[in-house]
Image (cartoon, rainbow, N blue to C red; front, side, top):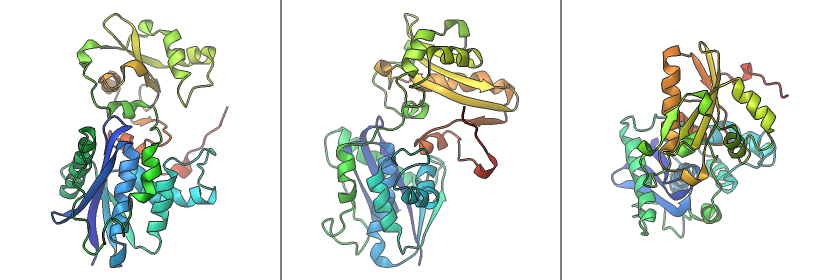
Length: 328
């Protein structure tokens, strides 16, 4: 008989207090986490623990998951990463590689099917798993251990089924999530009200010195010259968020024909004011500005934040073999 479960992860601040959880029914569930971890770690570890705790059954497993990043990692990307020595296509190391290796080992000999579920859409198993993961993260935020749950019948004691062992090192030194728009959108509030800040689509308000300084610290534009950035801004629709004194604290730009295509890029918020709702103010303003044009296709690129983007409507390319890139 197929075991049906949902798995989910949560991080308050990303990175920050983090949790994971999986749920079959009210008598069969588990959760855990760390005082400091990432959303990716939580999403991946929920699936890892579920695989390990059901390994003794020999039964097929159906996993509902709202993270396309996790699903694609296990079902599409992992084989290529292994062939390349756990490196990505660009030669950079795979993030959370220790958990990925343990997931690969746990999948061997198993009949596992993943089904994507849109997060917070009312799916009962997904909602239960989300509640467990978020509750575990909140427990660590409050300085207490979460209730680990009954686990899966027959899985053995924690000492015999050490799901946490594989991710112990990663939890002690979690790999930083990409410093991009949706990491900012999911950050917990630090206390300042978004009303303190103002969104503007007025290009004359953009501070090019600030923009280049901020982007030079990013992983995607660290080598970009000021001249190149100024030219890129000139050819784009640029947006900013400003504090009460008029200082720029957020930036994003969109390359678009205002009809059929748009590319969202270079989204960044000043590190000193992150977690204050500025990212949400920025993206909501950008989407509102573009809404009248009914643009048919909007792209973006990310290293490892796929599950964050998916929650806001983005998804992997449906036919990546059709797409080509020419590097300048």
